Amino acid sequence: MKKIPVLSLLLILSCFAVHPQNVGSSSDYIKALTPEWKGERFADGRPKVPDALLERLKKISLEEAWGVLRNKGFQNQFEGDWEIINPDEPMTGRVVTAQYMPLRPDLEKYVKEKGKEEGRAQSGGTNSWPIDILTEGDVYVADSYGKIADGTLIGDNLGNSIYAKSKRGVIFFGSVRDEEGLSEIKGFNGWIKGSDPSFISQMMLTSINAPIRMGRATVLPGDIVLAKKYGVIFIPSYLVEELVLTSEVTALHDEFGHQRLREGKYKPGQIDSNWSDEIRKDFLNWINNYPGKLPMTREELDNYLKERNY
Image 1 (cartoon, one colour):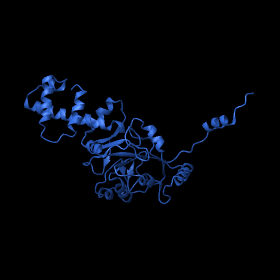
Image 2 (spheres, helix red, strand yellow):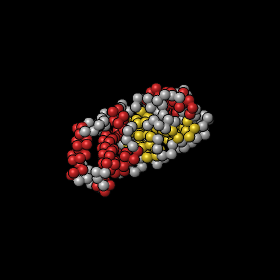
Image 3 (cartoon, rainbow, N blue to C red):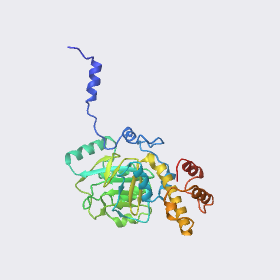
Image 4 (cartoon, rainbow, N blue to C red):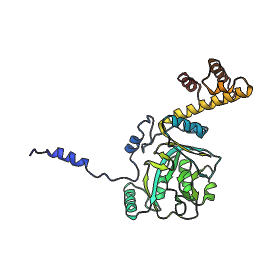
């Protein structure tokens, strides 16, 4: 029989070694989930999409954002039918995910042991752990499997903590309690499936910053969320810049087209099809004399228009 060298045997055995699952995903895992992002990252591995893009994203309609994602092959990034704490206030931000499940004592014991090893707070419930890692610009996104009674992930105390850390709010496929108190936190917002006066019971946190399902949508840590009155869209980080610029140009096209149709200068068929050279020149002249401030730089707009037939 051919002998296997000791070093080679150790390498083979290491392939079958058990690697304990952490509660919080490692930065290497998050980077592996988001390889298309080429920019700056946070220490936890999540893409650091610039704040300026998050502000521009607030003005993008859900339809425009959805159209760009659909054209890129992302069909499962929207979820609707929310209760919204402040429905007239849109919210954008960088996603921190959390997964909750019905309580199973042996698994909960493991989660708490791993949480202790990871240096997570041992007082209070594990539902505070995702809040502890929030930074400004983050949105706490949690799948709590639609549980309403006894499924309230936060009340106004944790809501104040969330806003203090993130200057944002939450998106929960589940519920909150003390919605009245949450609504009084200036700047805080929430997209939830319901509210209830009960305390969280018979459910447990199982992961932080791992992929989760939010109704119809698949969500990754570091995604960018666009939350508005009529629904929520989760955007892959590497597509945000293109989505924002494409949507902004589409909005300008629409504004120009609507104005010219009201003036009777063109017929609907001319505006709704590929534009003639005459209309293109008219559009560029309209841009040059645009009465307000363009949402993008002129360099961004010129580079975009060079590469596209409109």
